[in-house]
Length: 250
Ligand code: ZN
Image (cartoon, rainbow, N blue to C red; front, side, top):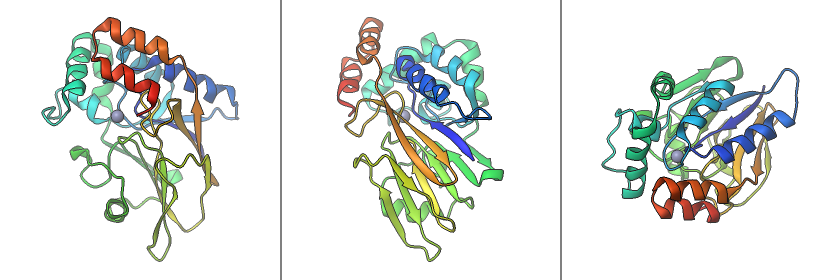
């Protein structure tokens, strides 16, 4: 198994291009496959370009709550006002082609050969977009998939939780501790959040993605031209705080 895992791109093509260049620059034979954990659009100024890049490069993917919101498939009254404004803006410029790609994304995806379960928010009630952040939530969710590894996004906070064969759960990498790589042990099960390409929230503004092999989960941080994305957001009339937060990674 040898994957690059991307999530929460959120219409940020500068971040996505930088990440895709890093993935292809690493080589690997056969070419490393890319998994996508949802939220191609929302917040950022280039939803169509991001959907096109994801469509062209991703091996398997799932839908996120912002993707569903733009498609009218999920209630947006619980979105904060800035997120809601960005969804309305995205809805107006999304092409039929982009829409068709997002509509075809499933809520969950299993890759049985590698024992992977992909979902944007949580294995338990994926259509409710629950956040999975704490041990109590991890304990519940380990019972909602049978594979060895569940890959999630949604909170934009990269972490690795491990469940031993006796059921103990530990965080091998917390949400903000910056550890680059963790070793994966045979017999243990994992919930891994891949972090966010286009809007990191762990205090590090660089784009985040995950390299996943049988032995380890490795988080990679990639600098990109944040100023260029912010200028486009301001020109597009997207809410200013959404542009500002990119510099802080919060
Ligand atoms: Zn997101």
